[in-house]
Length: 340
Image 1 (spheres, rainbow, N blue to C red):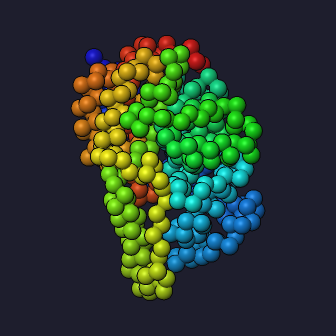
Image 2 (spheres, helix red, strand yellow):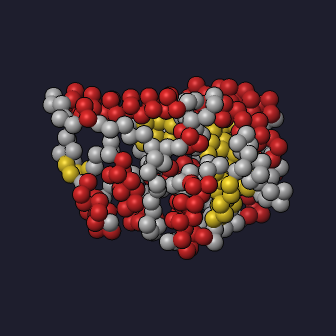
Image 3 (cartoon, rainbow, N blue to C red):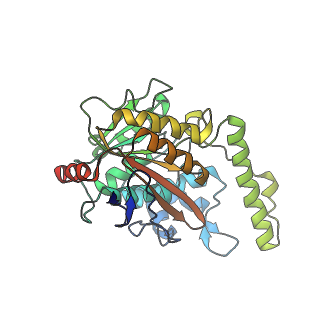
């Protein structure tokens, strides 16, 4: 049996299908950041950003992406200028997400949910963000881009309080966002999805590392590579390169868990089959491509009807979205017609 994948109309075999989309080096066609950052407009909406804007070694206007405060301020300006979200902020030590890459996830998910090429908009779409973090980036962008309603869960009360504080400055978000604290450290969907819920899509950016030491080492490698690349490309070592502070942002639940990304994905997949009649599509970012094969195998064992991979690129950086559904193509189409 063959089914037609929702991703760009490609035909894939059921039970173990792989579909590639977003293979160009650019972001999704609907992504507002395809042409880079308009720093003139960004500074106009958030003058504070001007203290971080300066020519980079190539002579282009930019910021120092190794500076956490500069990156956070850029995010605040991007969200205000393009998505009309005021006073976005995160506490010190929490993850600061890259806006272009995060909104790309949402655009590809919107394509996945499309019926006959029509991307769904409005509150009939119910999305669930697993581990929303203090930044709440997926529900904030999803509400502003598509008008969907969101449930956002997290095990950390401080993270949820910060998202609630952001919403307090943006009343239009509040009516479409429900925050739920996950009280069971071993659960992902249990305690978050109620018996009466019908979820169109789940999203997740899993913890990447398997320990604190692993997470800190990864951050240090990134900064070391940044300094080395500057020296190599410009034949001049930045005097501050050796003094780069460890840009370590992210709490335990955001960055690491026992077993790392693959174990988190295994837990998510195993638990997802208990909600197979309540969720149209499950999805998750997968940072390590080597983790796809074991995920496919486990999904097949769990009885997933359709499994797909969506490739995403931002410049030279590549990541992927793993999506799966336990519903047959005909049931998925009926579901989509009902909500549209």
